[in-house]
Image (cartoon, rainbow, N blue to C red; front, side, top):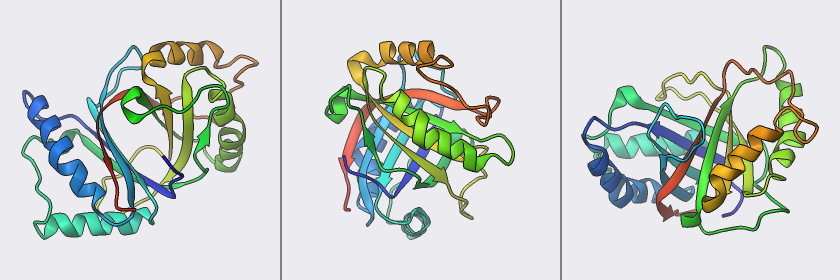
Length: 230
């Protein structure tokens, strides 16, 4: 997987009793439709799981972009409006949070853990905010210190940070920053346990500019992938 200049994240829980139908539609139809939009590099559909933090949503779709995310969203919604993309009644709009973001860092790889194929990987999705007025200090710490500390944890393969954007077609999101971590699948639970053990120690000093009252973190296992048009 190469560097992305943007990303789109769709956190979702399908309608009750429609989980299997939703997964089948997303993997076989919707994921390829979105990845066919110019600017899509790669897409993944994943389910929440493992012994990591409990997720408010049962599934996540992640897309890596080499196009301005606002333009990508405009194209996506135009296709939906024109009936060029088949939507499913398994979608529950009240249980969906869609976000798009611009890259703050390149994709960084671990010097401890080697790359692995998508199907052997899990994604740790972390949404954060800084404390009020501390964005610059927060970003300097997160991008220049914290990402590197996390990538020293065995099992973490790569990471990239993004800043969420506003878009008139999206609901307001309570978070401003997104970090996408790639973890070796078989080691994901152990890696998260080690991450937790290191957090706040000399191995992983945390910044007071992290708003700990507003953090979403969840582990997702890959169920489907699609190459993009980019």
